[in-house]
Length: 209
Ligand code: HEM
Image (tube, rainbow, N blue to C red; front, side, top):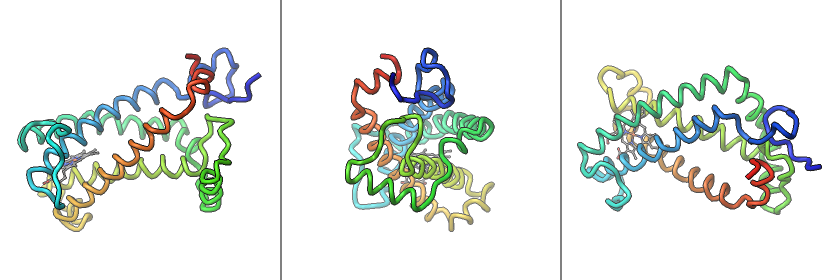
């Protein structure tokens, strides 16, 4: 019998069809759609007044022009924020964050990084995250919160002046917002690459397809 634990709880193998509960998957894919809309419209906003010496190719931006991109950005923002708030509320309420993401210790992260680099990282139990995964997943949640807060501080710099000041003003908030976007895009590239690289046979055992 397979030793793979395929769900959060120790449920009988017959019912253990999925790795993640349905609510996590629904919120994850909604977040993915919202993120793609936010990133591509954000790139169009950036192109109107680049912070650095480059622009994003128009083919991978959304909105057509600054005004159109801002409309997309502020529309998708609601999807992102409502979805994100439900995710955070359920993550804490169900104890999922505590169970899946804690503890994160420096020793564990160093040991698992070393094991990963020498191809000795165990993939026996995919329901449990290793320390590097825990750090990255917890880290990207924090980045997600910072990008929303810096975005809000730029959206309503007068009403939310205290938030703007917390970031050191509008101009610095812009850089923080951009750096968070770069971190999210980097995370997404690795995340998608790893999802595709997990052998199909292993995936079939886990999700029954
Ligand atoms: C509640 C969520 C968000 C709000 C309220 C928000 C708001 C804003 C605002 C007001 C701007 C224009 C800043 C300016 O140039 O003056 C902006 C730009 C931008 N946003 Fe967002 N944003 C949010 C989330 C996101 C997310 C999730 C991403 C991508 C992952 C993102 C990516 C960008 C990018 C790349 C820019 C262009 C950066 C620049 O050149 O200033 N935003 N956002």
